[in-house]
Length: 631
Image 1 (cartoon, one colour):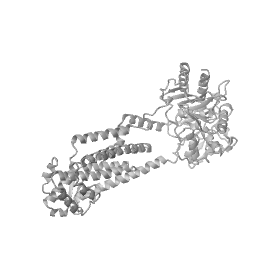
Image 2 (cartoon, one colour):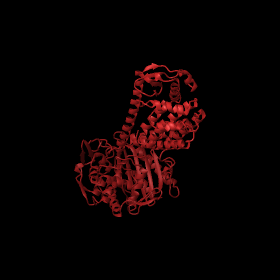
Image 3 (cartoon, one colour):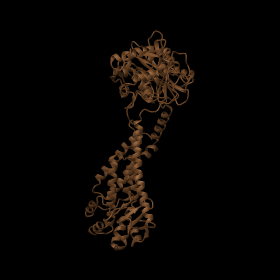
Image 4 (tube, helix red, strand yellow):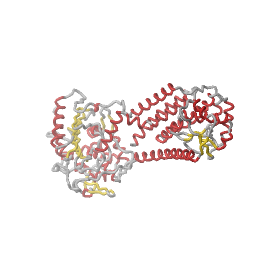
C-alpha cells in the first residue's frame, strides 16, 4: 500500500461521500428510513473503495505492473562508468562499483503513510474498545423478560427468535448492543415500567435490530477509520446516527403510538446515556431536541421499500466501483509516444527503411551483449517530436526506470544555474571513494582534482555528489524545470541525496529523459513531444554543458568515445544503472547529433547486460546516428 493509493482512495471517497450527502439533502422531505439507507450505503461504498479498486481488472493490471517495475527498477547506488572502452563487462572488484543499495531520501510519502495508518489504527481501536465494552456489558447483565416481546418482534417483520433481553445496573437508558448477535439491554429500573413504556422501548430497539443498524454502524466506523482525514466522512457518520434514530422513532409512531405520548416517554427515559461506544441508544442525548420536534412533523414516516433500498444500494455501489476504477491519467490524451513499440512514429512521413535499421541494430546489440531487452528513442532536436521508437524484450520508453549517469548533466546544469560553480570549478574526487555513514559511494577508478567537464567525461559519482551538496532542494527544482520527476525535499548531504545527484534515487521514463536533452541541443530551450517550447536554463549554462558533453565523446578520458561518428561531431553521456539481478545493468547512451547543428536527440539502452553504457550502448548510438543522418 502506497501513499498515492491512499490519497487516491480518499479523493474517490470524497466524491462518493459528497454525492451521498447531496442525495440525502434532496431527500429532505422523504422518510428518515430512506435517508438513513442512503447514508449507510454511502459509507459502505466509501469503506469498500479499496476492495473495488483491487477487484477492477485494469487496476489489478496497473498494480501488478507498477509493483513489478518498482521491484526491478528500485533505486540503487550509482554504478561508476569506466574510463575509456577497455572494460566491457561488470568489474568484480568491490572498489570498482558501489553495490550497496541506496536508502530512500527522506521519505515524506512514507511519513504521511505512517501518519494516516496511525490515525486509522487509533480510530479502529476506539471502535474495537467500544465493541468490547458493549460485549462485556451484555455478559455482566442478567437475562430478563419483556412483555409483548415476541408479538412486537413479529409486528416489525422479524423472523425466528427475537433478540434476548438483558438487564444491567450499569446504565439508565435502553440500548441495543452487539453487531452480529444483538441484544436489547435495559436498566434495572425497567422492572417498574408500564406495558406502554415497554411497548415503545421494544418497538424502538427492535426496529434498530430489524434494520441491522449495528452493521451499518460497523461500516461507518470502517469508513471513518480509512478516511479519517476527510471531514465529509465524519459529517456522514454523524448524520447517519441522527437519521437511524429518526427512522426507529418513525417505526414506533407507525405502530400507532401518539407522538405526544412517545415524546413523554423519550423525555423520561433520557435520564441517562449509554456507556458503550458501539451501542445504539434509544435516548442518546445528541440531537435529542431535534428528535422530539421531528415526532410532530407531518412528513412521511414510511419505511424504505425493498425495491427502493435495492436501487439505492446498487446505484451507490456502482458509482463507488466506477470511481475506484478511475485513475488521474485515465482518459488523458497521450503524446505520440503512446504509439505501439516497434512501429515508426514520425513527425513527417514514415521511414520504413530507417525503422528497419533501428529494429535490426537494436536486436543485434541486445544479442551481442547478452541483454534481456533494449529500447531506442529518436527525437527531432529542433521540434522535440518523435521520429522513431523501437524496443525489444517488452520494454517501454514510457515506463519509469533508473537511468544512471545520463542524469548527471542536469546536476551540473543546476549547479551552474545556482551560481555555486563555473565550468572552471574543480573538485577533489577523494580518489574515487566517499563515505556517508556506513554507506560508500565509489567511482570505477581513483580520481583526484577534476573540473566539471572532466567529471562528466569520466562520470565520477563522488565529484558529482560533492558538486551537488550546496544545492539541497534546488536540485529537485532544477530537475522539475527539465520536466523530470524529483522529490520536493532533497538532502544532498546524505547518501540518498548523493545518489540522486549522481543519477539514481528517482524513476524517469527514457522518453522524458530524451526530451530533457533537447534543452542542451537548443541553447537552454526545452522542446516537448508536442512542440511546446520553454526556456529551462540560461544560454550560458546550456553552452557550458554542451561543451562538457563534447568531452565525454571526444577526449581520451571520455566514457563515450564509441559513440563517435565519422565526419560528424557527437556530444552525449553514457549511463549505467544496476538492475535487481546482480552484475546485470541497464547500459545507455544519449547523444545529440550533429553537435554544431543539432538534428537528432537519440537515446539507446540495452537492459540486463553485463556491460557498461560506454561499451554496450555507445556503439549502437553511432550506428543509429549514422543511419539517421543518412535519411
